[in-house]
Length: 558
Image (cartoon, rainbow, N blue to C red):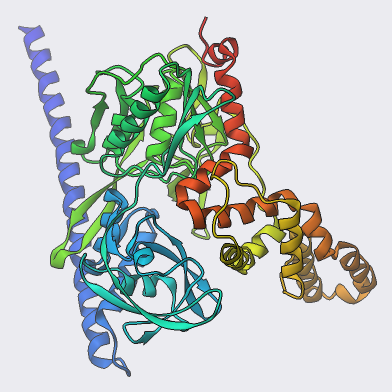
């Protein structure tokens, strides 16, 4: 009897504790709802007061958009408010499709120039080429307009027309062209081909994870293998790929691993976002040697592929540490056809690691966001027992140093000198050799140097920029007069000879010029193919795939 009484007391105590916890949770939820309700009422009243009493007329939509953007910026950079006008751009991120003229544009002095037309696009059909300057769109000047504003005027429903006043990039002749917009599809696989000394390795460049990109990748691999039955390995290039659809990442992983394998797990505050994403189908080839190329701009879905192949020891990852985006977004519908892209979960690779690099939940006092501390990073193990870490992107199995951005190259690019020279080059050369074999000669480089004479391509080195900052601090602290002579001597020592910079960085400048020129003839696919000849990461991938013992050793195969 005594035992029963004791058990009853335990049950009552347990029930009481459970009830207290439940009441605390409910109280917290009530507090949250009250806090939201209170602040919404304050915000609405403030907005009405502004609209009624502010000295000048306000633009309610613009003001509200700024307010919402500021609020969301306090969370993470991926949670965004998408207006009805911007929904089309958002759709492009997932489908690769939009209505428009089929070209990228760039700033050219005070106007906007056609930068990179897409193959068989409306802009080409209208006789407009890269380098031509858009002066007016449907009678509205483009002078001093921003690219985002111009892009909205160029986009529109398929079959609609837009009139462009164009200044020829070579002759400067002005004419009016009518362009009929089409639905433009930007392919996620701009280039795929066989590479290696004997064309024994399949190479696929994937630039974004849009709808059906997994089918496009598989189709490219099928075509390559059909033409080359003795294919010895595959290189998947995910450099500069910002990510996209999670389901497509799982499907692409499925090309190289069996069905039923967990590729990624998502976990969120709400249990509806706690999901396991598994492969569903038979693989394209689960045994062929595989390498995956990544860099600092490979993010999100790209990191799912790289992280999964690494965790399962299915492929060798080559390049630089990836971006570190381990957050998942979903689109939520809002009134008046607006959308909210909101971060709902974090994702975890098969070993259990989250590769999110920045901790948005713990900001510094100045509002900046720090990286996940090394002290709280956790070790995980791959299928074969190799150690991998969380909290900072995917660390490649083979590191290839990133090519540093050079001041002289940046100057030639941002000031459009490489772009303008390419326009002149194309006018003088009706055709060039194949995309694979095209290379500028010594004569071409010297011609560029001569063309550049008298043009201002000056720039400041990082050392010079630091010296300027040092001077500003020294002046404020009243030390500069005492060190002025030494400062000027150091400044003179750091000053650089522009002509010598051109010669010293000849290889990098030729690469920049080749990229601009070959794109005019063979579009994006031609540029990617041409770049393969001197690509350090691709060379490393070919080397690894050609050394079976080293390949297996990197994957921990015993």
